[in-house]
Length: 388
Image (cartoon, rainbow, N blue to C red; front, side, top):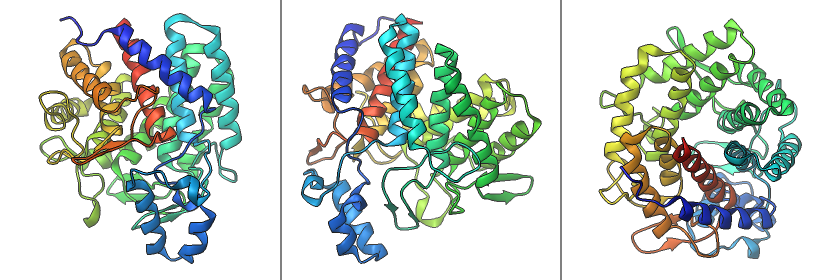
């Protein structure tokens, strides 16, 4: 079947996006960076619900209030990891030495952005983060950030042979194994989101597990396999009969959304590709079927929740494009529909992508980590998979 998306169009969009992110030196605003404002810091008086209110106000507002509030653009470690991942994928296509220069620059940035004082390499966010259920200070490392960056580092090593990339990745295992809490369930357990909480979040736990199982391929260690399989088993026990997962199992976090479903499946795919967790092959396929059948309208519109379309967050199409691109011809039509919808609805001719689309308006603030980095990650994977 001929692709519904012309590769040259994707290349043009990607080149414009590259120009935008490089001109900005990969730095920008983030939906959750409100607490970087010195004015909000004073106004909140360290009160939880005031900080939550300001964070949500800036995240939801279609007008970017950050310049007025003194919030400065910054380098987000997770965004830098996603850019590294994308440039590595591009280098796999044509061995352009300019991509190696970008890769080395981003590796140096990641080295500088590491969270200090932990057992191994790890990364957090460049802002304080207050939600309804937790407060995590700037640079508090998360299992999600560290694992995403770790997978990017390993892909970078596989593609370029850069030893620094592998060395940085290998150290992450010590952070995951030694610094994170574990919620036990029989002979399984769930890794905590950060070292300062005991949050049980399935995509976070599964991504941490996938990082360990993949690192074992570079340095065989029974402890890695044991921990990876036990933590994966915890979340697989919580997969629902229809193939879905709740985001988490606390009362206030029992929702099913698109991109976290994609993260779970991506993490499980790492196990299967490494030759482990074959007992979950049927569960994996059931999860894919649920993902493909419940989060996209007929024209490729990506829904946020399984039972609700809006708000359409850029993470939803980005993760779907990334995941389904490499799934073969069976999912090519779905992938192209999602990509076409994204280009038609969330792309600016100025070269960047928008944050969200609601029923009433489109939030066009060009966030760097949440939006540009994720689309860059998705489009580079699309091009690589289209070539295969």
